[in-house]
Length: 182
Image (cartoon, rainbow, N blue to C red; front, side, top):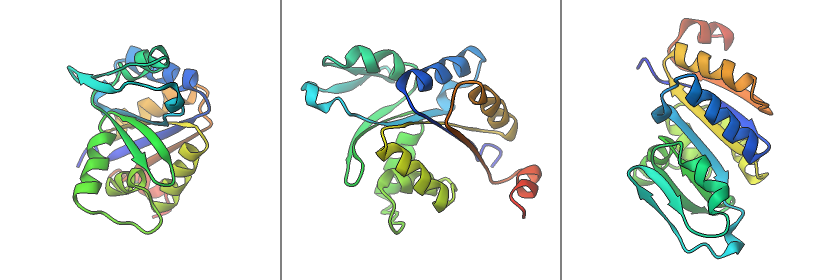
């Protein structure tokens, strides 16, 4: 498949992750190919709930402004209560990957459902563990998928957006096989 490639960036703060999303949007990157995963650490604020409105996430509560602009950029959203990670908000195609892992009863030793969703699209288990650890540490994951060229373009933009770490996972490009030592 020509778009079974992904770049994953880890961000320390909400504003850094939001900045990356906005830069990707300004560059013309297809927003339907972006996902974000983060802990919902504002649950103590008695949020009434959230819902989708025309593929855009809406949320009530005092943290609504915090999440509103951020999640409104992406298509599709979900809230998961995941043992080992806690309350997690997911937006973008990652939602379908996690649900697919749940529906398909994908069980990968030691991984959460978020990890199983990442693993199901071909991200190696050691990288998945790194991403789960980042989420547990209240960091933000921004994931872009697409063709090799789209992923490389997203990586370049993310490189200038204060990411703590950036990793490319490519499964069908000759340069990726060389880079991976295959």
